[in-house]
Length: 249
Image (cartoon, rainbow, N blue to C red; front, side, top):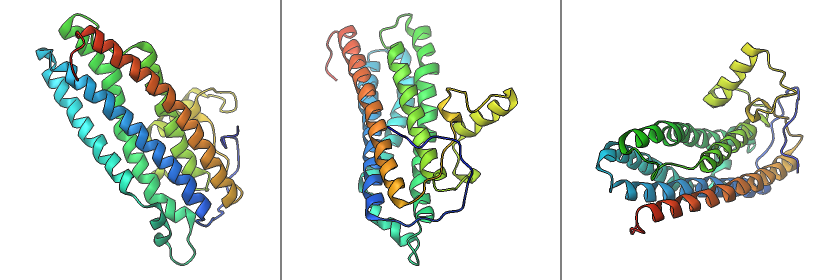
């Protein structure tokens, strides 16, 4: 399955919004919504169990703040009408212009998830060990890997949705992408040989049909990552359930 990643020179092709594209982007937004819902679900379980550990009350408060933010993002996604994209450029339904507000919102979500993932998988894990002296509430190594891998693919898709249309503006770049490219340049990394997904260049699509088809392929890729993440989150929930005496969530 092609995911539209390759070397390419850029052109300034301006495509149009089509019903196929609106439909395929709808599938992407469903993936983002499910992604947020998975986080909200596991964090609520985590927060519930943390009530039993008084020394983690400040960490619990931090997670509650993240849950509120993610729930807000998800509510907006659920209510958003993709058909409104055409209203951003009534003269010719320019896809490049219509996609910007959608891409910017997805990037906002991913920037918050970047901070949350670091806190959840790094800082908080150390605090739990330090304050409780046990691993009852820690994440498993496989769950941390799934969190990172899922996030990386959602970031790469969001880069692709913009740059495959020829838009390489710094205003529409995520920090993790810019940082990876900066480090690669400083290290002299060969971009044609790297396995780093953030360094894989994006090929510009030829027409509206290709953009719509590749968007659907991306939705399938992201859905596959979500399935793995859900399995890992289910295992985590079972672990905490057992460790805390099958307490009600």
